[in-house]
Amino acid sequence: MIKKILFAVVLVIVLVFGGSAAWMSVPFPFNKEAGAAAIQSDEMVQVSTTPWLVFAPKAITPSRGLIFYPGGKTDPLTFAPVMRQFAEQGYLAVIVPMPFNTAFLGINKAEEVMAAYPDITHWNLAGHSLGGVAAASFADKHPQALDSLIFWASYPAGDLHSLNLPVLSVSGAMDQQSTPDKITASRTKLPESTQFIQIPQANHWQFGFYADSQNAQSGLISRQQQIAQVISTTRQFIETL
Image 1 (cartoon, helix red, strand yellow):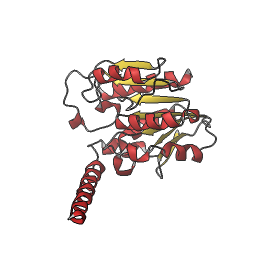
Image 2 (cartoon, rainbow, N blue to C red):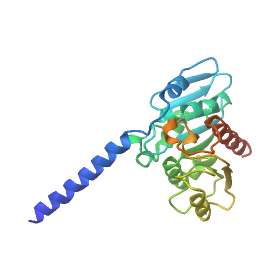
Image 3 (cartoon, rainbow, N blue to C red):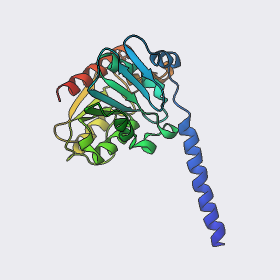
Image 4 (cartoon, rainbow, N blue to C red):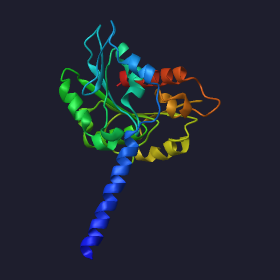
């Protein structure tokens, strides 16, 4: 009887994990054309696609790097057009694909990226949504490896108020997932010096190139406007460190 019960428990765990992994592996709809175009190298940016999506400026040898953790159920290509813009502005920008599109399964992958690019002397770690939660977990354990931690529509799961690291939180005033109330509630979990920037008329999905079907909201600024503000805010923060 005990063996049968244990077998049933193990079977349920396997089925739940397998079902969850299968669900997470299917990404949210995104603009595949924009993503595919963004990973083409040109005279400004050199792109490599394995083992990460890496965007390197050709005109200069960068000293600053930005590692990006995508959110749950998010194909890395969703943020390729965004990270490419950082490379065009002089950064080494790296999007880290996650196992089963789940950043919690690749929290420490930033270490692999840093080891591969020893010439980068200033590393910043950013994450969108659940990717930001995973990035926060890495930063909590490895603050000495980073110049900053950056949340896009995200907040930490644990208490980071004593984290000795500059932190930026960029959020949308019309975000229905990482809502303004949730961002406000996260303040007590972050260092007092954390910079909180809320973009008016911005939502969760226009931080990246998710499909238009995700944006069933009226009154939003355009995706181009939102991403421009996100990039500008993030760059200003990094460049004052």
